[in-house]
Image 1: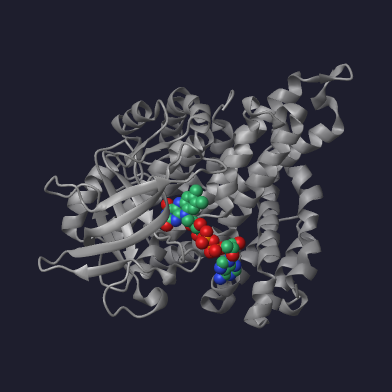
Image 2: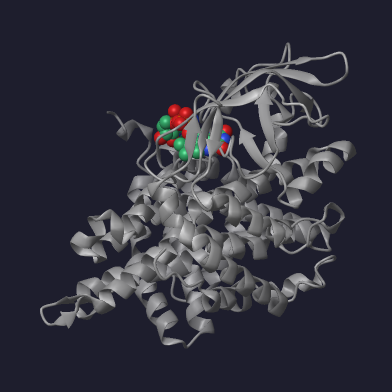
Length: 546
Ligand SMILES: Cc1cc2nc3c(=O)[nH]c(=O)nc-3n(C[C@H](O)[C@H](O)[C@H](O)COP(=O)(O)OP(=O)(O)OC[C@H]3O[C@@H](n4cnc5c(N)ncnc54)[C@H](O)[C@@H]3O)c2cc1C
């Protein structure tokens, strides 16, 4: 990432002026997590990322991960092993996890900021810690004591990595169609057989062991998502033996070439059931908010270095006797990027802050309110930020003119790398469906109405909030088919209005010229687009006759 500088000032602004990061240290267990300590850690992590991860980004893209069919081994790109060792040795993987498992017990909000910076530096690398985090989350909440002792500690210490094995050829968005089988063994363990596809870091050479979390069906399981169970399948067994799981190939992809996307074969692999049989889907839901927020962050995280690169290019590229940044249309592109980046950061960090509130606030009522807000914001953060990630990285290419289309410039890689974020961890279409069919309907629509009322209290959002309220009430009353037909424009509208709400708050909290220009642009040029989406939200299913 040519010349990427972690945006510590912008992140600190969001911590201090938008999400009340200071309030976190009032939560039990977070007494040590004051803003200065968190920003200090972030600065140090930023230096690590710039020094160790940024240099990997291009080689990850050009060389990529590789698979050796003879040995079945997956090799990460040059430099990955050394960088991972440094990441693990410094303890960066343990920051948000409980002290009793060897973690630092810091708020998720800090992890959100660290993830932004790590992903900006090298998205392909960041996916390995990210998937491990998801696996840790699952075991922390649903693993038994022995499972936590055996698997959690080495994963928190980044000695082992984790994977999520959901997808099969016939089971993509429809996770309930999973066919991988699990049969009980005499010793209380299980034998897992089946094939999984598209498994991120399913195999690699960074650590000795990999802890696969695998969705499978036990004998006589009910059909669909109610019959899915979750198993731990380690690559290396506790007795040191090699388990019956192997990678049989990796994909050739549009982007994230450094991240191996593996086809995994399980043949009578020894597995250990997590929790109860047939409860796997319920367990997946507990980690869904953090995983989806992480992917939403990728949209922000790639837009930021794309913006930094485009701005630097525009300052030095001469056309017509002046630097192209002097041209109004180039300034428009840059400001369009900047203002959306600010909005995405405020949204994603608020989402992370809500997760902290849900888990750690002292009072039950406050925890429930945090959970409801996180539930509502998560599909919006995931889909809005990743769609924008594609739009904004394209704009960065555009600012570069012809040079943007040339791979050596580096900006094309942002466009290719970010494209997957709208697809995995629930496609953006699935996020929109989740928003209108589930999240709006929590407590009969009370949380969404409360959020809209809060947004309305900010100044200058007039028509946009009215449109959001109308669209929301229409969706709550509509037939489900009609609601789903309007779900994607509705999610776009919701994200756009939340962006306006955050920018109104940014404008009230800052006189820094860059932030003021960003907020004014958003409020006058982007926010009005929200109301124009009402006809698309309310058109109904019958209009979609193709
Ligand atoms: C690089 C990469 C890494 C990945 N990493 C992992 C991983 O680590 N672990 C893992 O388990 N999986 C992983 N995946 C799989 C990924 O999560 C799936 O590809 C994704 O969930 C979509 O499933 P699908 O590809 O089968 O598409 P489909 O489900 O066939 O979707 C095709 C289209 O139909 C739409 N669609 C489908 N069903 C509905 C519906 N009910 N309502 C509205 N629209 C619908 C979708 O939005 C999409 O536009 C990865 C994939 C890739 C490409």
